[in-house]
Length: 189
Image 1 (cartoon, rainbow, N blue to C red):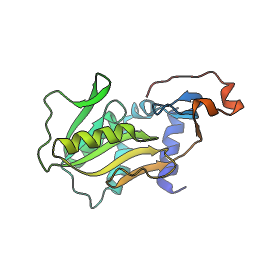
Image 2: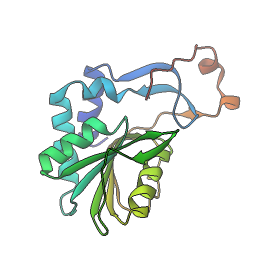
Image 3: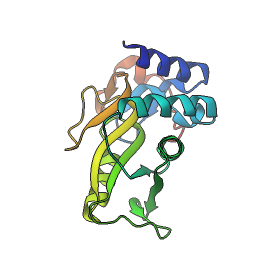
Image 4: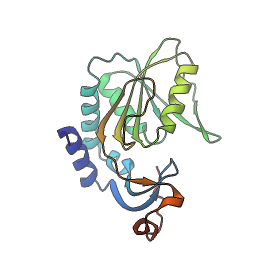
């Protein structure tokens, strides 16, 4: 594990953001581990550091705006934008789907960085990319704090994570006995 991953894992452990138990992820998969980014993101020193680490990985990428899907990407997205002195907007749920609201606009050709907290299958990132592209924006990269996908998803744009920390995930009908015996917790994502 590279030093950035070690540092991020340490931040998650110190803030109680790496949970153990039985969880149903937003993807519908079950896991014995859950990254509760809200716990790490309430510590502004940790958020500041994760944004610094993200911006170091983004050296050479040119972007004008940071777009974060709600809720997970809100805090880290805003801090990345603040440190980079870029515009920041967010997507939020409207009737179950992500939408650009509150009068936010994306210009034709605007260079956009999509940032999220955790990716397992990448559904929210794919929604965000579609919205940006449909509005004429140009996604230049996707960043996440934790990639738990088990391999870089293909978003059609560069994908950068601070930590690729994979824990086994299971379909509901394929749970191992040791996980099936633990009550399900839904901490929110």
